[in-house]
Image (cartoon, rainbow, N blue to C red):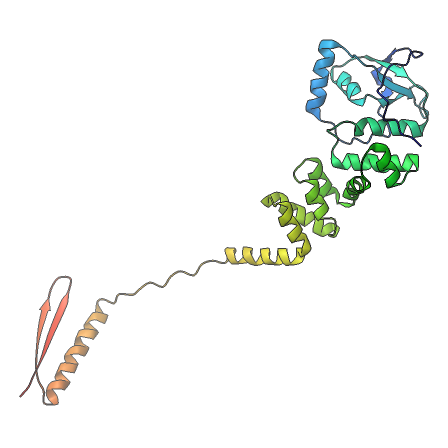
Length: 284
């Protein structure tokens, strides 16, 4: 089936804008966006405060709660109005089945550039499901290549921890794809290392190619750094009784030389910080 990329949320001529209580409105169950930028909502709220709502939101009757209206398009405008404590919001009530509602909600978000890669991947997956499309068929209808759609959807195989770093932009999609071959446990410890050390995509690919070896080497390096350094041995300068022993040894050698028949003269010079012995051997 053809998707609704031409939809611009224009007010149909046969549709009347109604003022609906915000308390009667519920978010779109098919909303692919899991996180909303609070700063962006605040900026939109300021615009609404100054200029009013230029384009009404689109809703439908909630099949499960007859008194409620489900948002088809315009959830950011609805959230901005909530932040301003509006009691009512201009809206158009459409009759639309689940398949069309899901498609419109997904496509509206895909057309916004700030959709994060995980929400975008979820949107593609939902579009394929509700419209019974293959990746190739979906890619053709959204104007993307099949490989582009496939690479986005593959990101959903990452662990929640890795996905959260992708959403917060602490790692890139290329970092994420480099981790796809790893187990869940290895993905989590690898992404912590990437964020901690600011690893490049190339460094991440090298780590992923031998993740056990990488962390084994890292552990060795950390163990080596943690090992206390051995203090250098100090040169021991002998003084006191050790010095006297050396002097007596020299004098003993002189005595033995004399007993052997040599004529030996020696002279001692004692200073405050030194001791000098001059030995002279004489021929007979």
